[in-house]
Image 1 (tube, rainbow, N blue to C red):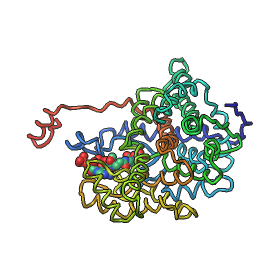
Image 2: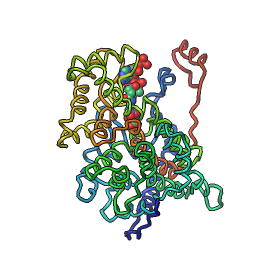
Image 3: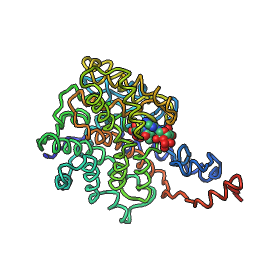
Image 4: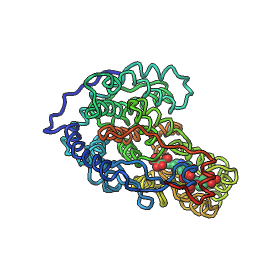
Length: 454
Ligand code: NMX
Ligand code: MLT
């Protein structure tokens, strides 16, 4: 692909300088908490948590987003509608650019238009993906899952990691480590949509690659590069922002944080995070939802319209076969995911989409599934999550290759993961190393009525 280098936009204070000020202001808070209040108890651990996926144990710290079980996600203290309302919008659009959101995630500040333009320009310089990355992806069997291709592409870039190189140089220290991390993190978020578009075109458009449009922001350029029309630009912007971050404990964010905590660079760390996102209980659920819905149409509605009765039967058939209902339930949320609602509202306000048969079917599942899951009585949360609604939008706009949907999730999730590990380095977070115990120890503590701490 042709190199794209734009003249840098001049701003009085750059994103990196703003970030530096924020980091310097935050460091004393973290240092004081550890030094003066390090032994203050914030949680306790029970046997079912130790065996059951560390659910709800408070042992990660991030200021980038927080997930309340009832309310859902807040990015830097703002709900989804507040975030969309506050950020400067892309030209001619009701949605913010992804670049403005990146600025906000990293700093907590709402950027000015000038500051957004600086990031857009910076990403244009950073987004030239080395040819060896495309060669590595091209060398994979064409029927590899697109998540394998994305993870491989990200990992391939490791050889040019600025963080890994700096680590072995005399100038590297704990104080400035974040600056090298920031360089890799910014390169990675700028390049991942280009790699994703390359994979899409390689797999589904006969390797018909489309060059970067240097005049477009990230969301608009992604739409352009996968051969979509203008009306997909907001879909891309909304999708990437909504999927960016969900506090630190989810599998992709936690994996990225864990791997980076060994000072593995962002490429190693996010490639690993993507491998976690590719699991059917996590990000792959978005392709599973489409698969389930289309199979439902094929099996139950060949000669009839979908009805609530047929959906109910199909849901029970899924549960009775021992499978999960994809797109429903959550480890933390106990209400409908506001990311589901944001996408549903997008569908309802988009002429054509609101009357689309697949959207109507997804809405019918929304009416029926929570009751079925409640009646079954296993899932702690019977309500839909982000994945139950995202695929139908892609499908409507012609991105019908649903095994690509988790790649889209991975492009968005890079924003949150990269912002988080930039701050991990800024605040000097330690290598992660929880303690394990044996079953015999648990049985002893159970007999004793609890572990004796002395
Ligand atoms: N369909 C059927 N059973 C479910 C569902 C569901 N949608 N959700 C939870 N359960 C079951 C779960 O498998 C478990 O069964 P068992 O005791 O036999 O192991 C029981 O209910 C209790 O699970 P929870 O504590 O409610 O859920 P947990 O925190 O363990 O898991 C999920 C959370 C999201 C993994 C789970 O709800 C699920 O598998 N959902 C379907 C897959 C999905 O949509 N994943 C996407 C999540 C969002 N994302 O993008 O990452
Ligand atoms: C996510 O966005 O990561 C999912 O909703 C899963 C989670 O938060 O655990």
